[in-house]
Image (cartoon, rainbow, N blue to C red):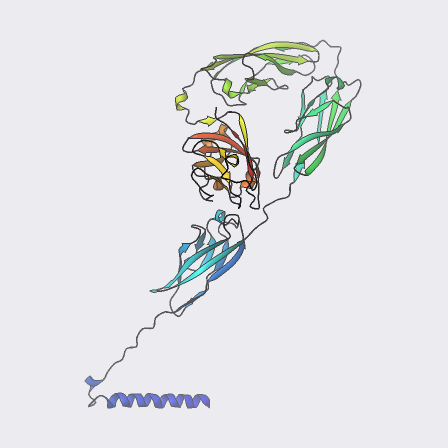
Length: 475
């Protein structure tokens, strides 16, 4: 019944309107009828600001939220007009979904919030809203996990002192490893390299099959406060000591270009014995420290590359002693150098003595003692509010995109310098400098155009500002 009266009322209103229209015409002629065209109705955009809280270090492309907006007619388009951290955010022009554009810029230690202005458009109508992203700090420390295996080998009795027995296979997910002997079944028989885990003969006379047929040792593998224990088991093989040992060996002569890489092979001493195994040792060399030899294989390698300089010396020699049991044979190694045109070397690489630099947590970065003055153009330090290292010669504080100014970095070694990709420090470390602790890197000083071997040994978190590294120095 309510609908009926409403409709009847609408009909009466419509008839009244028509009568009024004709009565105002002045004579009823067709030319006096007036046509009224309704005015167009403008689109109305309704939108709300977007506020989101998220953990630092999101993945690139991760969704942060969607701008909530509607329009009375037509469709909507979305665009970024500005943002507080350039390049951090992106927006889908059709859907209004806001995503991470550059994940490296979402670092709580550098910035705690990011904002952006979004323009929403429908035809000629626009509406501006604000996006606010608040970052929360993530615990970036990880538990140390050591993976290690026992070492079991069999060797002939009567090895020489210092002979290699084997290397403990171990790895750690963060930091470096240290190796130490806890105990051994035959005291004084074995030794271990604290850095590499290489086990060697300490007391050669204790490796006598007629006295003992096996030796064991307990080794502790440590990283920080975490440790793992492994067992070393050495089984001795009896050697027929009544047979006269005869060693056959030849001198080694080779020619190489000057300036080889450290560790490069120069050749292998050709030797054999009618019984038992052979051990090789350097007894003397014309240029002290230039060469080294593998005690088990007889491979001769470059120990100090700087000593293979044609302008200083044109040949190097060494005397090698080959041993099997109590029998020895001496041979000579002769290395002839050829000159290299060093004008086209392409890279200036510092290979001088290793320097250790430490910036203490809380240390004043403006003090010379808290800066590594590599050259007059580059002095590295770090602030005490978190963030990364910077060049205090040209920067007052760290910039996550370019600091340290005047430098570029790459993971790897100078031995592979032609194949390395150099980037700003933060990009080279994947946005997490603490993750490259213990890894080899190469630092390029752009203005000085020199390349430096560098390895971070520590990186303080939690806005402490400390770090330490080892680097090569000028030749």
